[in-house]
Each structure stands twice: as structure tokens, then as C-alpha cells.
Amino acid sequence: MHAEAQKSGVNLTIVSATRNNDYQKGIWEKKWNTKAAAYKVPLTQENKVAIAKDILKFSSMPGTSRHHWGTDIDLNDLEPEYFQKGPGKKVYDWLNKNAAEYGFCQTYTSKSWGRQGYEEESWHWSYMPLSDNYLKEYIKQVKLEDICCFAGSDVVKSLDVINVFVEGINPGCGKI
Ligand SMILES: [Zn+2]
Image 1 (tube, rainbow, N blue to C red):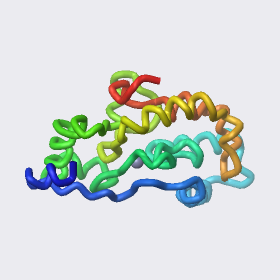
Image 2 (cartoon, helix red, strand yellow; image 1 turned 45 degrees about the vertical axis):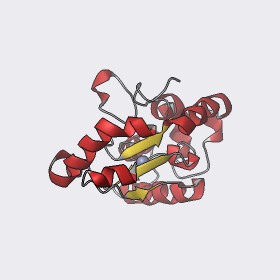
Image 3 (spheres, rainbow, N blue to C red; image 1 turned 30 degrees about the horizontal axis):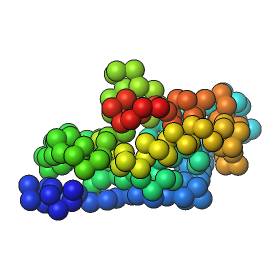
């Protein structure tokens, strides 16, 4: 796909790919600590839900990211604006037209059709021949109580993170 895109003057660059649980915990807790600093301690349950929801616009809780699977990549940039004009739009248009031919699907598309979970991510693409099965197995094997042991993990249940975030994908990216 990379070689084919280059022929059209589109340079696909992976900016993030596989991330294990510890790495994701690092990302999550860095964001958590920054946001939590704006609140009085001890944090109430309501504060915790607000902080988690804010992080969950674009970042996963450890244990819930598709980046754990080795099947998903972030391409070129992590800002929505990049993909809206100029070279970024050229990249996005090329992916929309051609990525499916190589098995890739944009997991987090617009939420206007009723998808739940993360905000739209133009950069996040999933290799469906593998990830479709990972998702099915995830749903079968992972329970909310398995998602634990990081800052704010006591809001996992109230946010129903498997149903809302793990399953909240573009319906065009395989069936759940
Ligand atoms: Zn991603």
C-alpha cells in the first residue's frame, strides 16, 4: 500500500503502531495526572468520570486499545486539521479511495451515523483480515473487570468501556 501510494505522490508514514499495555498505561496516566491537577483532591467519582471522558475523546484506557493487537496503525499525523486540507487531505482522500483494497479500514469515522466511543480519527487504520478476529475474540474473552490497575480504572464499569469504546467502531469495519 505504501509503494502504491508513493506512485500517486502520497507518502504514508506510520506515526504509531503496536503499543503494549504498559506503554498505553503511560500515555493514559500522563494525561490523567495533567487533567486531574485541575481538580481538588480527593477526586470525586463525578470528577473521575469527567477526566476519563475527556481523555477518551482520542485515547484508550490500557487494555482496551486496538493498538495492543498489532493490527492497527496511525498514519502521518494525530491532528484532525492535518487531514482537512493540503497534503493531509491528499493522504486522506487516497486512503479513502484505496486502503480497503489492501485490507485497511478507518475504524473511527464520523459519529453522525450513531457510532459511539472515540471522536473521529482520520489517522487510525486497521488491517481487517487480522483485526476482525481479534475483536471477536476480545468480546468473547475480555470482561470489564479485566480492565484495571491504572489511574481512574474504577470508572471502567460506569463508562461501559467495552461496549462503548471497543465496540464503537465504523460499522463498515467488520461485524461484531
Ligand atoms: Zn490509533
